[in-house]
Length: 444
Image (cartoon, rainbow, N blue to C red; front, top):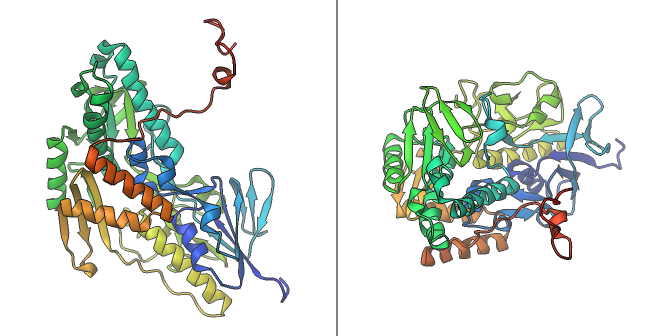
């Protein structure tokens, strides 16, 4: 690199970590390229609200180019990263293009972990993208349409929704579904006995919400059961078929919809780095989030398993895979790059834990602040309001915040979930102009 060339920074992933790297390098003497296979950032903590018709996909997604509009030293490339050459110092895209770098930040996020359980990949719905949330919403609504045509199918479990994993995602999903059934489906399907629709929450451990305090876990379990969720603890899934979940104890549960919220693992792109991976596919890194023996390569977000962190991941010292960690790591990596440019040493990453929160449904939330923030605990309406306030702050884009707030306010007043739309990929045969073809010829 000549004296007139600027340092090239390539950031892989437009999630919480990647966007905060780019934002924190604003004004630095670098040229930043942000690459992602989608042209929008997804606020993943609210995807379950898209799946349960409380919000539209556009309320929780924000166009990346709009985020970068005022970032004069950053550009966006739409593409799927398929390889990383650490020796040649470039990133390979699926279309054959290569992005050379001086500093590389790998932050593609995480994918759901099926733990090798047969049938999960083929039959379960997950919540890691807006498209997946829309697909899940469409599937649930179609099950009700099918039941309206054939009410006897309800006895076979058509309207049963089984959620595997009673962490925050599973708990929030369960609470939102029972509200959707009670306040949306009941009025939409007067011909159905909607009370026969069941939400079944399975957890392999002996408690819901394992990261939370005992008092909070007891509150969440009580509220879920009071609102009609069938909570089953110590329920280990052994196999999944097209319409059955088989448990380790030999029992089976019939379902029409299966939601997998039992865990995540690092994005498979970690394997392209050619290093020995830790638990759940995470990349062991130095305490400043750099890749050992690879100058200029940084790992942030769900992919990172930093040295010296609290033993929260099976003793490996990895931080939890949550948005706050990714945000702080993105900012820290940008500091490390700036320090390198100035000829200064980087510093170890230290996570400032602010606490955790979740909601079980209308007026029922939990919020636990870390000891550094007073260690206060809120449940009920106060917990719900705290959750609402924090999520509105971190939701990217003023329009997104306004739409989400108005959507929640409308639901609060009317009990109505407005986004009950079945949106699916276009079938061009069915969308052609003119009369429909004779029966039996569709798709021919």
